[in-house]
Length: 143
Image (cartoon, rainbow, N blue to C red):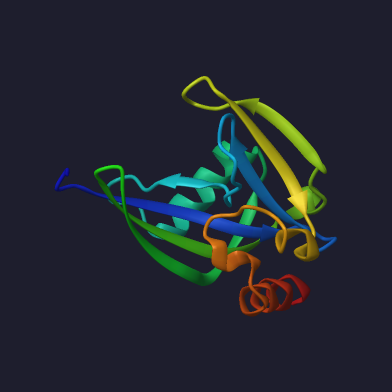
């Protein structure tokens, strides 16, 4: 296992309709909030905002920390930090579905889901589909 720890910043962002935007890479059967690796010297909220913009092609207002997840997976050590967020400005209504080529060249899907739909999705982290997390997401989106 590598001794390096990967730091990942994600945003669980709701649009004006209260739907949560998630991404899925081709070949994967689960959905995740947009995000990616933090750069050296970059704060986690800055990394979350930048990575969200790169993956979702939308601006986001990053709010409070929602979760921290530590993973030991496929010989890698990762720490994922997920923030609550809202889509900013004119982009407050995200397209229901979109796709593009990700940085590695594979197809990446983006889709908005209602909180009810989250309960039936394979989503990572799985806690996003629980009533407690959904109450936090909904409460923040309504502020």
